[in-house]
Length: 122
Image (cartoon, rainbow, N blue to C red; front, side, top):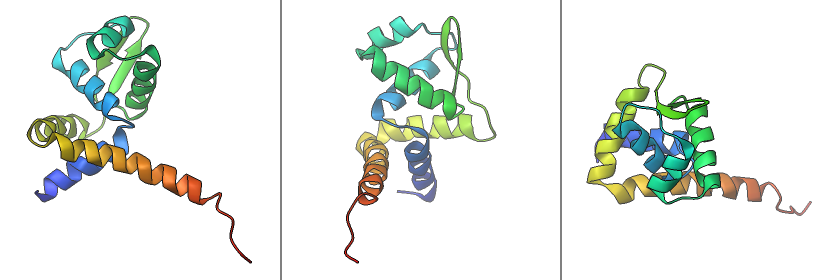
């Protein structure tokens, strides 16, 4: 794996809360148009909640824009579009590596949160 692949995996881990969000991002990117929420739920065969949470995260990451008609792939920032392009290529070539990066980032966040509640001996 190259250094740029590692950078893309870090981008995925930092920007995407779930593999659902990645799939949603790539679906939005596949056609330059506004997608209705019901349409996204149908295409992904996901729940309304999964799609809503993924959209919220993608908007917060500056990768998607929302308006009253739906969602649209619209990355903002210098490298966002090129990172998504690279991530899409990497996901096609090494899907398990991308999935692991996303899931392990979320698992480490949950572990850190749980560790905050461990009782310590004084």
